[in-house]
View 1 (cartoon, rainbow over the protein chains, first blue to last red):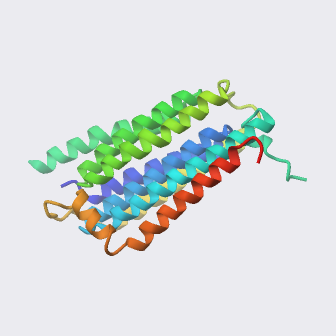
View 2 (cartoon, one colour; view 1 turned 135 degrees about the vertical axis):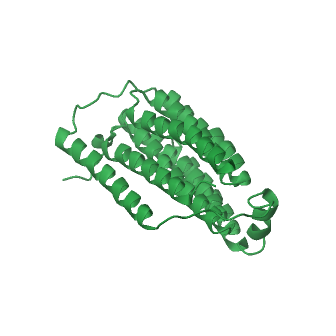
View 3 (cartoon, each protein chain N blue to C red; view 1 turned 135 degrees about the horizontal axis):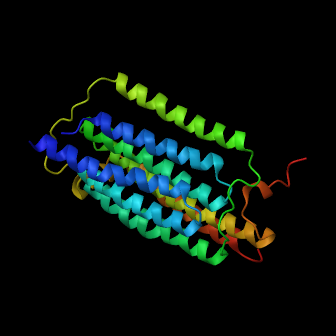
Amino acid sequence: MAPANLYLILSAVIFSIGLAGVVFKRNALMVFMCIELMLNAVNLTFVAFSRYYADVTGQLFVFMVMSVAAAEAAVGLGIIISFFRNRISVDVDDASILKN
Amino acid sequence: MSDKAEIFVFWVLAIPLVAASLGVILARSAVHAAMSLVAAFFFLAGIYILLTAHLLAWLQVLVYAGAIMVVFLFVIMLLNFDDEVLGVSRMRVMKLLGIAGAAGLGLIVIRAVRELGSMPMVRVDEDFGTVRAVGRVLFTQYLLPFEATSLLLLVSIVGAVVVAKQRI
């Protein structure tokens, strides 16, 4: 069996790739996609630990995370659409009305 | 012998997964990034099967690659962006700091995983991670989170409709 360390290191790599994307992408949809990448890295960690401890609870957590991610994607994309309707741009640097 | 086969399959799935994730952040247009993300989800589902999480692998393909990414692509096609202009109004220092921060976080976590020592997997039952095993726990022990999730989905449906409407 592949040791669990391999899966955990893979999950860490994908998480940091997603984090780098969230930090330096300007398009709000790209930021959203990198957030989904980070969520999937966490899912991989949960599944790896669930397999390591032979406990199904970790996979249940992933079930919940998937449904929360689906709900969040729906609402977040609705927000992006209404933002675009008002401003014709999804650059996150343009969302600065609250800035003094 | 089966150890080596398993590690080989792991690398066959993990290297394209990392490549697809890099493709998400290095892509110029949003459609290319979305396609790379769909590929990453498929390879991740393969890794779930390698970890005997069969229900989750199918749910990954159905929910993430099949529903969420389709909605993403709808929105991308609807809003019709131009290609992202690289390096215009983010300072180069901030970009390098962001990449360095993410790489630093990755290195810290990798170091922590190394210090955990060797973690060999144990043998599990035949029906570990199948629909029956997950459903048995989901509907008896974790019934409250299940019902709360359905409430959450209802709230998100109503919220998405209200947020994206033209006239409230």
